[in-house]
Amino acid sequence: MAAPDQRKDPRQRADALARSLTDLLLPVVNDAGLHLESVETTRAGKYSVVRVFVDLVDGPGDLDLDALGPVTAAVSQALDEADPVKGQYTLEVSTPGAERELSTLRHFRRAVGHSARVRTADGELTGLVTAADEDDGASEHNGGMVGIEVGGVERRIALGDIIEARMVVAGL
Image 1 (tube, rainbow, N blue to C red):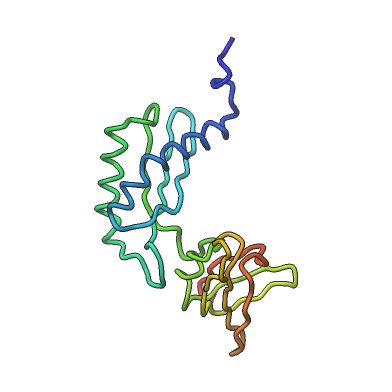
Image 2 (cartoon, rainbow, N blue to C red; image 1 turned 30 degrees about the vertical axis):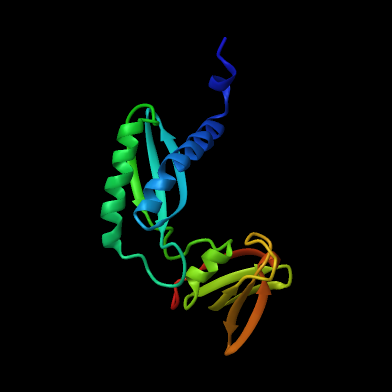
């Protein structure tokens, strides 16, 4: 009979591996002066794909793609040394992308000056992210205010009232 860990659902195993990889790679990415956004693992037959998403630490701006080379090399070296992934795998290191999800104040600070689609209980709006400010005494996950300019008028929305938000590529 298989041990309980071996009978875990494949998604549970992938999630556990992603958490382990996050713990391993967080200092590596931080040392490169970047933020580790997330780590995902998927399996296709006997091969795995490890996706590492990195971003600037904070504030508006774009991550220079030239910065991905050194962090990719550092991540690859850390994975080679620790060897946490069984079997062969493909490593992909990239940014979260142009239409990334926005769920924290840090995400919204990174999106200042870009268009975003925001859904709240009151409806959906698309506009320019103008601000992302912390509320006094509130945590980043349930506090703070986000400014969205729609039709020349700024709306202030509490982060906790946002159900879903995503950057959108203007003009599409």
